[in-house]
Length: 467
Image (tube, rainbow, N blue to C red):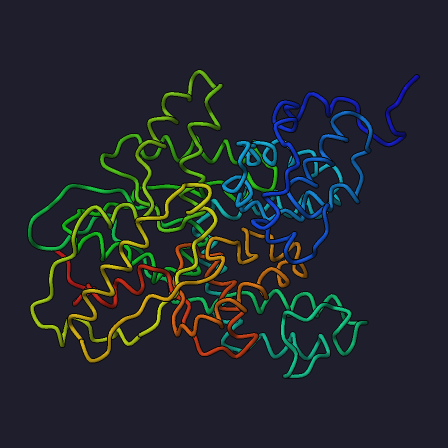
C-alpha cells in the first residue's frame, strides 16, 4: 500500500538529512527564543513545529504544498533557536536544506524576479549605484507622497498596519508598494572608497575591506566610517575588486547562485594579504560560510577554507587595537551627544557568528572615554530586553512577509521604548533600516546607528585626513 499523500513529491526523503530532523526532542525550550512564535503563538510558527512539518514531509506523510511552505518560509532564519537548543539541533543546516524545496511552491514570476536580482542586479555594482541615485531622486521628489495618494491612505497611516486595516483595501497593490517604500532608508550620496588609504603614524598592517553591495548603496557613509576607524588604529585599508557575498541568494534557497558568487570573491581576494574586514554582520556570516559551502568541491575546498579563515567582523577587528587617546577632550568628542545607548545584537553577528563580546567591549570603552571627556554628561549603556531576538528584517523577509515582520518589529520596539534610550546601535544594515522604520512609525525620538557611526563620532577627529 502506498502511504504517500496524493500531492507529495517523491525524493524529498533524500534532500533533508533525517538525522538532523530526528535530533529535535520537541522539548520546547526553543520557543522563547523564536520571534515568530512569540508574535503569533502558533506552534507551526516555532522551530519544533517547522521541524515536525519537515519530518512529516520527508517521511512522505505530508505533501509539499503552499500551506506547508508558508510555515517554513515564515521562519526568519535568525538561528536564535539554535543558540537556545540544549540538544544541539543544527537548525541552520535544516533550513539550508529545506529552503530550496520551498521554492517549488513559489510563483514562477516571483522566482524569476528574485533570481534576476540575485544573479544580475546585486553583483552589478555600477548598476546598483545608478539605482541608488534614482532612489535618491525618488525620495527627493518625494515619491512617498505619491504612493500614499495612490494607496488611498492619509497621513496618519503607518506601515505597521495590515492591508485589511487601511482605508481603501481596493488599492492593495499601491498600499504594498507604499508600505515597502517606508522600510527604505534615506539613500546618501555615493562616495567611492579609496582603493588604498591610511593615516600618518605607525602602521599595524594591511586589512582588506569588504563593504558589500546594498550596504555600500544604502549606508555608504557607514563604510567610510569603518575605513576611517581602521585607519585611526594604524591599519592600511585596501578595497579590492569584489562582488555580492551571496547571502540573500543563499538564504532564499538559491545555492547555485550563492556558490558562483563565493568563487568570484575567493578568486578576487587570493592575491591580497591581511584580514578581510566586513562592515555588515549578514555579509560576514556568509563569507565565513564559504569554507562549509565548498567543502565537497575538491578544486575549491582549501581555497574557500583559507578565505573564510581571514574574515573578521568590523567589531572583531576594532576591538583588537586601541584608538588613540584624544589630546583635547573638547575637540575629541564634538558630536557625541547621546547619553543613553542600547545595543541590538544582529542575529547574524550573535547567533550565526557567535560574536557577542567585541561590540559590548567597544561600547563599554566608548562610555568610559566619553564620560571621562565630559564628566558632566556621562554616557550610560542601558540593557535591552531580548537584545538578541530578531527585529524582523532578516534580509528580504520584511519585503516578502511584511505583516509578520511588522509583528516581530512591534515587540522589539516595545522593549526599546522601555529602555528610555535615545540611541540604539547595531551592526547590520537590515537591522538599521528595520529599526529606523519602527521608530518613524511610532514617532520615537531615537537615533538608530551602526556601531561604527557612534565610534566614528567619538574617535575620528578628522575623517578626511589621509596620506
